[in-house]
Amino acid sequence: MRETDVLIIGGGAAGLFCAIEAGKRGRRVVVLEHSDQIGKKIAISGGGRCNFTNLYTGPENFISENPHFCKSALARFTPQDFISLVENHGLGYHEKKLGQLFCNDGAKNIIELLLSECADVGVEIECGSVVNSVSRKDRFEVETNRGVFVAGSLVIATGGLSIPPLGATDFGYRMAHQFGLKIRDPSPALVPFTLSHQVQKELSPLSGISIDAIVSCENHEFRENILITHRGMSGPAILQISSYWRPGLSVTINLLPDVDVLELLRDESNREVTLANFLSRFLPRRFAQAWCDLNAPSQPLKRYTHAQLVEIAEKLNRWKIIPSGTEGYKKAEVTAGGVCTSELSSNTMEAKKVPGLYFIGEVVDVTGQLGGYNFQWAWASGYAAGQYV
Ligand SMILES: Cc1cc2nc3c(=O)[nH]c(=O)nc-3n(C[C@H](O)[C@H](O)[C@H](O)COP(=O)(O)OP(=O)(O)OC[C@H]3O[C@@H](n4cnc5c(N)ncnc54)[C@H](O)[C@@H]3O)c2cc1C
Image 1: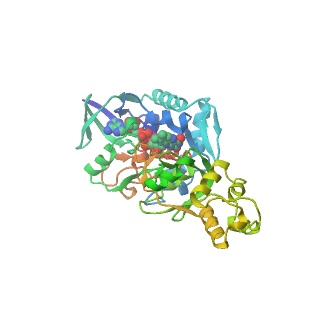
Image 2: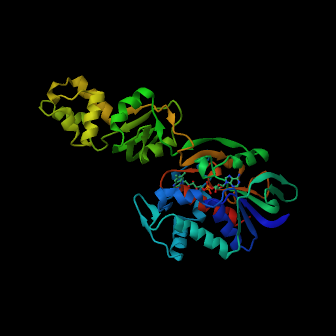
Image 3: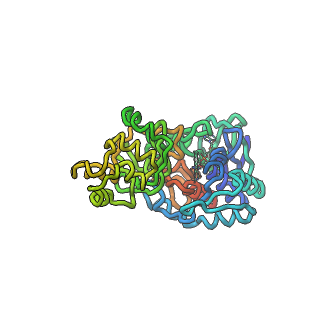
């Protein structure tokens, strides 16, 4: 039997950050990670360069049943706080776009930073630890393949369901269930869409093409690239909107966000220029041609009727697709939903009904948009719990 003050299950971004903060307070901390190494998601994040925060992080960048829940933690540990840590470790970083900060030399920098901070404050990390059961008497007893651990504070930092080969499990949700805490149904988010067989067949000649577009669903919209793939649609704008999409809803894509297509077509409606040539002024030529093949066989603009021009403009400025689904957890960058925020203190991340039990990071029903927000939530929620565990 091993006794410690704080036992953290899950050695990802949130778990390690909480461990560091608790260690700084002189708490004895053990992290149990079931994989053979910590931080596997960090290692592959941001295309291998880890988009570790976003300069413009605010509560509006998160999806949650209670949009106010994340405010307190985000205010107490800001992007600038994490940047200072990165700078103190002498690590180079750059802004790619829209406030997204990436490591110059790869995501391993962030893992090394976390491991070095853990070592400085004596955090013990036990990889390859499989938790068999958790019980609570006056303290928590956690039975594992490496013996029984006993701790006054138990932190669940096991993340969501995305990318099972990287170690994702439903452990956090099972723990919430065991202790009587409500869960908001998890679902894949920041995930590519799949399309009906028919639409997919029609779009496949366009696969590989990326276009700057405005993508909207319900009251949300994002302007970034969309990418047509062999399986459906991806690209940052699609990933962003996928987090707000629910089965059955349509998604509207404005392929020419800076152009009122109808107005332009009207202006040119007595011209010899073909539709494909006209469109290739604004869109990749291959896309313009294939789009015409699909939607309106190309001919000189003056041969279209007014009604046809209206229809063409509508399809370019308001192209509606109904995704048949998503590529699911095997491709989702994050998991939306999770432990209900109403069950947790926004100050400490402690379960209101179960003193000493904490949930942090992605396992909580707080989901960031694409762009470094999910790591900022992991750091901020880990920091918040780390002050109290
Ligand atoms: C491909 C990809 C790229 C991404 N890129 C970015 C990016 O650039 N920027 C960004 O902000 N976000 C990015 N994300 C999202 C980000 O990685 C996560 O939101 C973040 O890692 C969540 O941190 P976490 O600590 O809560 O969970 P995780 O990082 O998932 O860590 C959970 C840990 O718990 C362990 N675990 C699970 N079950 C158990 C168990 N039963 N017992 C013991 N251990 C267990 C897991 O092995 C894992 O190590 C990306 C995600 C993916 C999949």
